[in-house]
Length: 498
Image 1 (cartoon, rainbow, N blue to C red):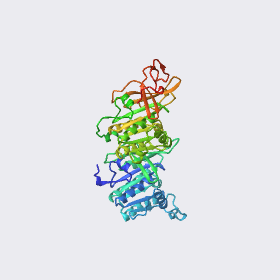
Image 2 (tube, one colour; image 1 turned 90 degrees about the horizontal axis):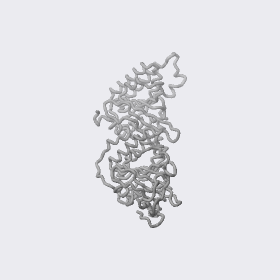
Image 3 (cartoon, one colour; image 1 turned 90 degrees about the vertical axis):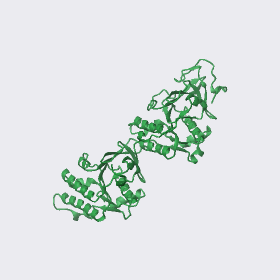
Image 4 (spheres, one colour; image 1 turned 135 degrees about the horizontal axis):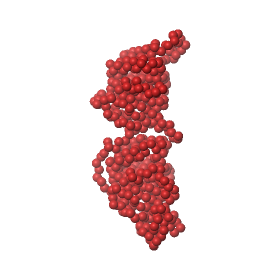
């Protein structure tokens, strides 16, 4: 493995993390991707990182003009006007005019030799530490034959190595098939890909296909291309983030719910709130968060379904106002658009809240909308399992909200996460005395000996209220209850509530 002083940053922290410190110096790397995947922007990141490290850089452009390249940099708020950066435009307007036409049938041999020699001469003159070659498709067209193309690339590779240049060669995959010739020559290969969905922003991800001499994190890694450049979100591997913590139970903010859970919500575990829409899952989650905030803990709430404009007034009306905790930085409340955020970006946000902001409580509301952030639901269970395992290993108390279809909650689930959850709290509507009432029960707990009784549940002036066990009712979970005794309900005014 290359020592740290023989690594050079790509200028993108997430990519450096995937490469465990950056690219080994003095080698040639191939970055492949279709047009629009961010190759040019990545090349600019690479050169600007060199400037920050005091290293000179050369950008060789065959497909774009120097003016176009400057405009790309300026669109991200960058400037290429620096003595350490040299932009070499191999094909100028003069070379494309009628006077540049050759009378021979195949001018490619001359043009290819001139191209390669031009690059070599510029490197001899400027002695750059970093080189970006954009793009190889033009050189492939000039070579016409795979043997000549490979020979010229090999010549450039040996030339770069003699001058100790770290080189990024960009390829737009214009060849009909994958260019295995160059992949075998390159010291490392990175694929940039873009997935166009039926709705929402395009999803971009990269994969390190090959990297000699160093370890790297394999698999697909989401990245975004926005104003300001590229941000890479390394694939979360929970095993890399284990941290010791003291197991304990924390109060949910409601004594009756704590008793049903067998002592409260356990640190280092996740609890699933499951039920139909409008039954009170979000409000109960807010109750748990509010209790943690009052204890002085940091918390993060990720809202996919509801807007802040409706959540904040409702929380205040029920006594769960959180504005003061948001103002002092103790509470992070994020409303996310599932059409714009990828699973990798979301996991990175959660990691930032836990590792940088010290969040001890994390709420994801809801998993139904989170599912829409996935391209076709691919690998959702694996990614969610990794995220939950990570949060458990960091001692975080996680609450997941999952909605069921249908008013009575008997419809199908978008996804079944009950087997991944350490505890499951079931919310239900049921009919009694001509009213539509609500019930709550704990159906599973891996950490505590929970209650198996079913309790009436409602949202009152004091927030969450839980009544005594509905021992005289049958069929509550199915939504069609049958009264068999005289248990008082919360609406009777004399039922025990907490």
